[in-house]
Amino acid sequence: MTATLKLKTCIMLGATLLMISGQLPFSARGAIALAATTSSPASPGVDAAGARLLAAAEPFEALTEMSFSALGLHLQRLVADGDAAAQGARALLPPASQAQIDARLAEIHQAHKADDKAGLAIASVEAYRILVSAAPPSKVPTAVNLMDYAGFRYDADFRAKPIRWPDMKAAAAYAREQWNSMSPKITDRTLTQSVDAALSDMQLAADEQNTFKARRSVSAELGFVDDLEKYFSTR
Image (cartoon, rainbow, N blue to C red):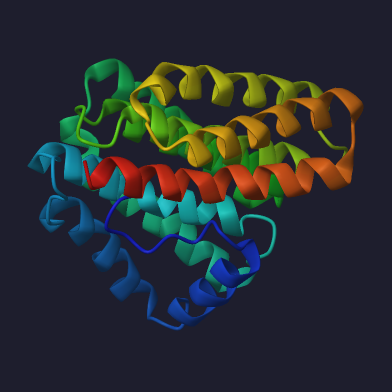
């Protein structure tokens, strides 16, 4: 998300960075996650409430990315970061969204306890969706963050055992829906053509159950989300 360290361009690079941060004491990491939701500086075009909600979504993005690779205390710390972030942002959510985030947190803890890595990733990315959807509109359209969500959901489905091809189709379609809502506002033709191609490949890969194309296309889509954030942030 805008003005934060992005871990998506390379999943393995993100894993390395988070492993380093995992050396922090448990209590310190929880405090950092909570502080991020209460004192995060607003990015250009983002009000204070929106900045706090977007900051609260970050630990769930990290947990989604690391669900399949983090172990032991490292994974426990990521889950705790999500708990702290949700606690800090709870008052900013409407009652229906509070109930939804509580349900996703329960699923996160259940999946963590059961060592259900796919279930943990899916519950985490759904918590991310709830928080970014609740943030007021800013210079960066909500649809950009929801494309982020769709890419992470697609990736989690792909890494599940067995691969969840039907849900990957739905995630690709959702990403396309979000893209269609904002693409007319983009004048960079190279960017629009590149995003179009990645989204088409995501859908085709799911239809064909092509693992190579699925991995390549979702990596491209998540990278283009970063490009879209930069594009809108400078407008």
